[in-house]
Length: 113
Length: 113
Image (cartoon, rainbow over all chains, first blue to last red; front, side, top):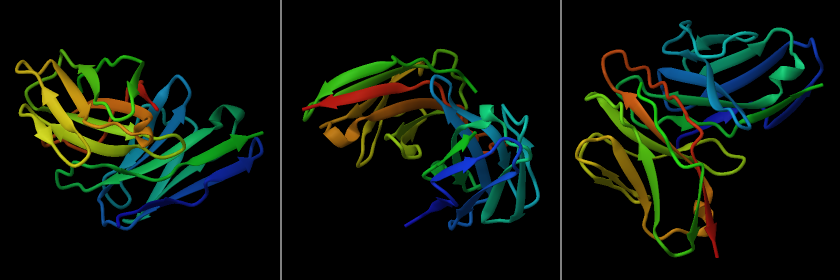
């Protein structure tokens, strides 16, 4: 059974903290994605990566960075968390060879107080 | 990627067919129509995709009009577990394909007993 796992389902952090959200996939997929989901705004792409050490900005990269040191792992980093980064964060992956199905993790609900 | 338009919400009686429409009037020849759904508190899940022919799998059927400007996702016998937000997405599978998906607001389908 294919899997995308995220390190936490729920996370509470304080303003100004550095936050790491981890995502791991076991399908040997080349492409990985980070989205955030907010009521009324839907899913928005933050960053994606199509290979190890490669990254591309999505639609809302400000305030975030990413790291992809190994193919199976894609990390989202909030350098200095702010309250407007309170959101649901979803990781996804897809094979780079014309894959059709993007697989999503269960999500991490982050609250910044 | 072309934009899609979906009704914000729909109801369906349990056991009946649910027909979810989607308009994609600016779709180009290389773009496929994809459907995902998101059950509450979970990540989105792939359902089906197609280019111009009708498609069917174990979850649903996809009917695409001849001019490809609209499509309908059909859940033949809706159950309470099909209550979810359904997203219609158009995606170019050309050489620059990264698997990136652009989500709209989707249709919230409520299946009622």
